[in-house]
Length: 374
Image 1 (cartoon, rainbow, N blue to C red):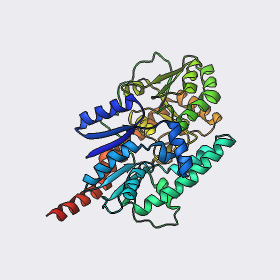
Image 2 (cartoon, rainbow, N blue to C red):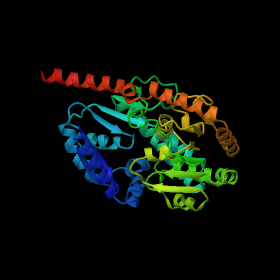
Image 3 (tube, rainbow, N blue to C red):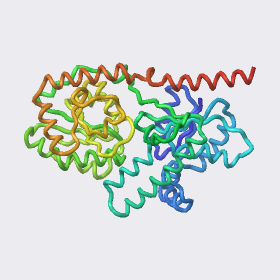
């Protein structure tokens, strides 16, 4: 197996080297061009911004050589990265290409539609354009790919709109490493209440979620529980996220080596996502770490869980306050939610269970290649 990936920073390159060493993999990287160049190229070519945002001509040259040497399959992680495969096909129309599997994960075109709801007039125009062009591109991928993977039935239903009978759609959900994320003895917080949110903190849905929560919910929580803390854990915090640390009780960590240390200190997990697609791994991680979860309906739409059984539902500021106060005051409720949510991830979200359909597809392709060569 050979992995090819674009990088934006020295840290990206470092992580790629660590991944290669840990799993004994071959990894090919190339630094992405300046963002302005990528945005401009998208406009000039009338492409979705997402395609050029992850595109490097230098990486394309390297990928072309790699594709030529592959015979089993090419797997692309996200619809945008599939452009490397299609560019190869355009550049070498007479050269046979291996079968393509595209892991859409989330339905990105609909995510851009969601962005519009929380944007000003100019961004609404940009996001509308992106949603329209990306949807068209997603359908073109489906016509060419051997299989298209989505993380939930909700995502695949939205893609097909229940009007198309595509026979190359597979649902393969995200999973959890249950040996890594496991309940631990909680650190004694001396009676303090610790809330946590995790995620990449320059990703717009995460930025929107914690900013909204801090601005409309947190000050009422801290007014009633002055020693409470809200820790925002995740790499690349924007300037606006860093500024939230000026609020009483709010901590912004940036990148951390081991996120489990922070789960171990947390009493409650907050997922106030107003924009979300697919399966939120952060929620599964909280479930697996035995932390009670309060979140929006968007945060759990791809997970087979139920409000009041596995988590508490809150979709506006008053509901968040009510559910938080309720959870603080009711120990039996906390115990019931964490017991049920931990059982859920063990039964349904282990990686071996989730990856079985993909293993079958890959095994079939390998068998076909062996047959051809013998």
